[in-house]
Amino acid sequence: RSIAAMSSTMFLLADRYDDFVKPQSPDRRLDAEMWKELQSFVDWSGVKSGDNFVHIVLVFLAIKGLGKAEHILLQMPEGCSGPESAMIYVLQGYKNLVPSVQTLDADSQSILLEMFVIHEQFVFGQFLQAENLPASIQWLQDQGPDSTSVKLALFAALGVMCGILGATGAGAWHGSKFMDARNSQGIVSCLRQLQHLHGHSCQQIYWGYVAKRVHPLDMGTETRSGLCLARLACLCRIQTKEEAASLQKSWRSLDSHHRSVLEDFFLADGINETAVIFSYLPMVLSGARSNKAVGLAAMLGQLVELIEMTQSRMDFLLSNSQLSVLKVNLFDMSAFVALVKSSFVFQTCLEHVRFVQKGETLNLQMTSVNWNLVDEMETHDVGMPSMMRRLLRKQRMVQRSLDKLQEQRYFRLDAYVPNVSEIHDETILSELDKLQEQRDPRIDARVPNVSEIHDETI
Image (cartoon, rainbow, N blue to C red; front, side, top):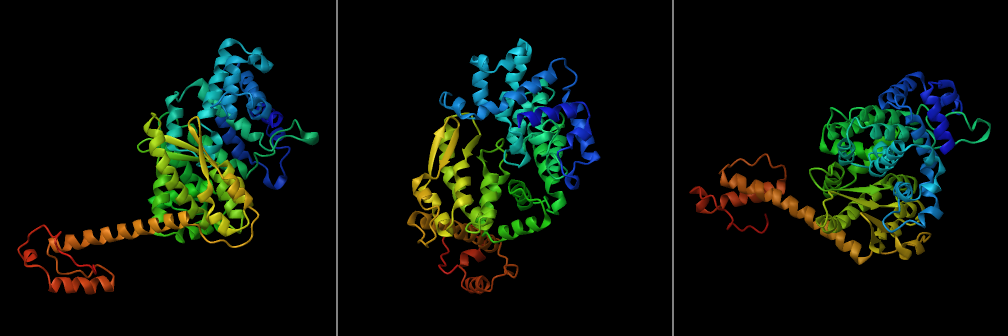
């Protein structure tokens, strides 16, 4: 991957299109228009303008993968578990482990360190899948939209994406197999939006990208539910209109309470309200779509339950810090969802999970109880905790509906409006007619307080 990323970067900088696309199949080859977009981003990044900038980027690409090496991670202190945080720790105290870094002067090493900090806080791949939040864009803007480190970090992110499928065989030094016509669409759209860090709000950049990403799928983004579905489409890695229609069908199968919870969750920005980033959520949703024992509709139902479980912990964790975004790692869940063979085991899996805090992140662990049942095919009864949570959600939904009805009733009685034909429910109409006939004389006197009117049927 490092070799492919570095060679692709050099071909981008030298504008060598033929070498860049050489590993790609002819039917999926990156076209000239997309290449022009990439060249525009290269110019915006300013990587060619500094004497050492290219050298810094190449060192970054050469050593970035070391942060995932197990023998390095095992030596990291507590709270330093991610690949970027591991490399930051190494660069700050153990440069002898990475000789390439020692070829850079002091100023260049400072820029390199800043680039790793930026990659730790703003993960380009998460933005590509709408996995992070507008707050993530705001953090990037706070570093200075014209910052050299920010621009080089984003250019390096493009290099990382180019190397995803690695480099093997005779064409090992030739270009990017991954950055073809299909995969480049979303990446170029991301890069186009990020070039507006100066002059656009984080909301405009984030939701502008989401809207453009789903535009070819004929998905509207004018309403709350439309925006929520658009972000879900990015998270589910939806590519075709048929897949988009399937997502919308799964959405319609949910009740109003589930949809309301998901809308609040997916539209929270982490700026004006607290929010949660579920790391590896795209892998969870992808596994659910591929696993017939799970399915997307059932996964969305479980996601609602997981959101409510997380909310109870989020209030406590964030109250003791200045953070407005809680990160929850779902890697273990993504593996479980892809492998579980029984829908009943899946429906009860959240009864046996455990949250483990590591630094500023909560790790969701599926525990041995779930893993011992992952290959189970027999039917099991739904457990009591899960059943109680579902009953509680239904009770809340009914209560909200009754509250809305009560508000309508009080408004009409208080204003003494005899015509209630706009309420389209024959049972309610019948009972309101009875109430109208038997109404308290106080209503005729236009006394505003109607809280003492008791009608158990209504």
